[in-house]
Image (cartoon, rainbow over all chains, first blue to last red; front, side, top):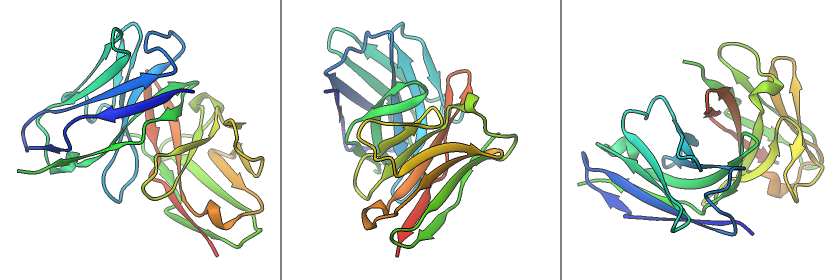
Length: 118
Length: 110
């Protein structure tokens, strides 16, 4: 049973960097079968794909966020991370980590709310 | 920039059938976009319903089905139940590792 759990600060100041980690159990982030993704949802709005990382550490990012995003993987801890730089109030959202397989997201974390405010 | 569009809202009677669609602002949706569908209730993470156009995720009842209808991806719900009242999102793969979510459809069952 794959389980994914997001963690990180719930409050980030404007212009600073948002950092989240997703701990994975029941599967390995070193698996060549899956991509490990981040997705977000502003309050009351729709879902937005942020990007993914593959076991080889290749990445793909949403073009609208690419200049500010870095996704990395730590195979020793079986987790992957999101860094989003220069945040503004528009980055306030519930952030989900998810496993991507066959171009779809088959397992999701429960999500964590990150608020950008001074 | 290509945008993925869905009906903002839809209503269906209990026991009825509803088809939600997922379209591109530029071009047609095909199986090469590997359409997938997700159900989300308030405060919960999305649940995967359909992937690769028409494959039901484990545990999803056969009341839910996916297809390509014309130039759009479609999610059909038959025998609608009160607990189908949710937000539904589609995702399209655009190539080069890029996935795009649709804006979501709020389904009301009444």
